[in-house]
Length: 125
Image (tube, rainbow, N blue to C red; front, side, top):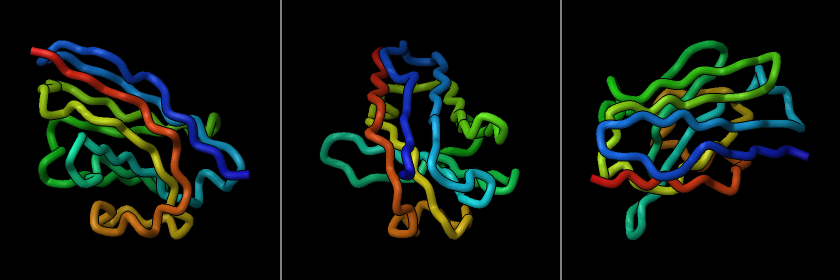
């Protein structure tokens, strides 16, 4: 059974940082692409970061503040979020793509066929 479990969300003051975690199991971790998406109330789900085969990808709007890393031995993915602002408030999800592609992942959400339950991040000013 494919499983993804997010953790690390919470309250953070504007300008602060947060590191989330995604624990995965049930699939060949190194073959998949693992991405993070977020969804704020009333908004569409958007891509945040993606990692596959050691390479990373970010939408232009996320470059510079967000980073992603993985621990293949533990099948874990860690998004690091810096200089957080209230507009970053959202539920953050990790998702897995069996095709292993991160290119333009924000526009290819349909390829991510396994999702975690999400973790809430709230940034206050």
